[in-house]
Length: 187
Ligand code: S3P
Image (cartoon, rainbow, N blue to C red; front, side, top):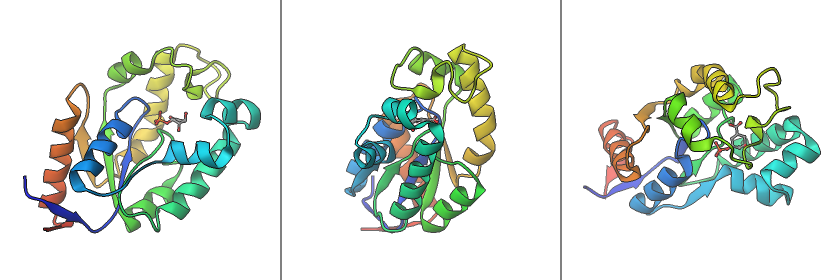
């Protein structure tokens, strides 16, 4: 594959368990640019794990920190950034990310997501008592969260089917599409 030079940052969005971090790291390695994980930045800034932030400060506080870091970092970062599943909190954030970089959606069916994340203690959004109070079954929570978030995810410039495919294949599809859309210079 041709070597290409990244001119704008790449923001990977999609549900928890869609492979954003795995694909993001590989994509950054392939493009020879820095990789950054928004969840890791939040943990570092807060000095707490994500479940601890949710438990001690609540989801609202997590979302405020997530929003602040994302809006700020996205203006300076030059590389591949994997977002959290809920990072596209509103239309303003989607518009902002598309102005500063490429927004790419890793599309995975809810059944695959459920298989991947079921019972994961590090996913506070799946716990009873999270914002989806009325239903404790993680499968249907995922379905509902996905339904709420799809209108924002679907505004990404590039959508890649990321359900049960090897990460390398997904990475190559992303690079191919970005090259086609002329966002890159050949090196
Ligand atoms: C969340 C997804 C998580 C993390 C937090 C909230 C969500 O990130 O940001 O637990 O609302 O879907 P991943 O998508 O990387 O798991």
